[in-house]
Figure 1 (spheres, rainbow, N blue to C red):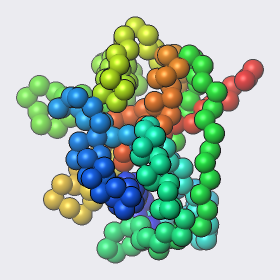
Figure 2: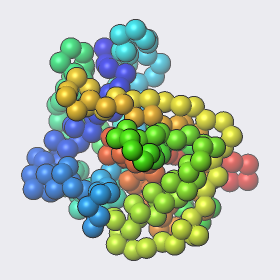
Figure 3: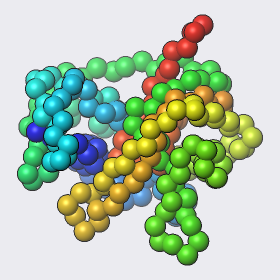
Amino acid sequence: MLPMEYMYYISAWIYKVIGKADKEFAQFLHDKGYGASDTKLYKLFCFSPLNFGKPKLWKEKKLFEIKNHEISLQLAFDVQEAASHFIQGLFLEQEFYLGDKFNGIDFKVTKVEALPEPEFTETMHYRLKTPWIVSYKVEGSNVPKYLKPGDDHFYEQSVRHIAEKYKNIRGEEIPANEIDFKPGEDYKRAGYVIKPNTPEQTRVVGNLFDFELTAPVKTHRMIWNAGVSEKSSIGFGWCEKKEIDGD
């Protein structure tokens, strides 16, 4: 039995694993992330949903009942340093628990495989596998508004986030007019709890949709390795290349 909102637990595990390789680097990544901005400090990794087949869903208890004995996970880092620290001797044979104090699964890593990047072009088509979160601060409110495609500010905030994320991570500016994205007409709202069962528990809401992104190739590489969304270090904004006719 695994909590449905398991993404926070994977994120915590990744920080813990990095810490075994380099405690100072892990603490820095956790507390600040990279970047010069004091208000928008970005983390440098993202990860996919767990691949565990078709579990039984206990909706009222918010649990997955998983029968598969082999489960896979993809994760990506946008910095070579983090990737090397993470991989060297830390993946294989590692044993860990994933879940809360009531429900979870004991895992053992048995195989690690490096996956190739796709061939990037300036215009790419993607499919989100985890929600893209776009938040907007409303004046006079401490609670952000979580936008969906078609809302006022959704396009503007999405493009701004990509540009700011690239600047904070890479130290280079990409003019906003070099970034254009077109979300598909169909989308699905998805809410997740972050830091469940703690005083810091909060709920965020994102959207799942297909999209077309036109941007410099280096921008595509950044979102491929660090996610396209806010809160990518908790797994949000993981996307895969979408095959279209003619590809």
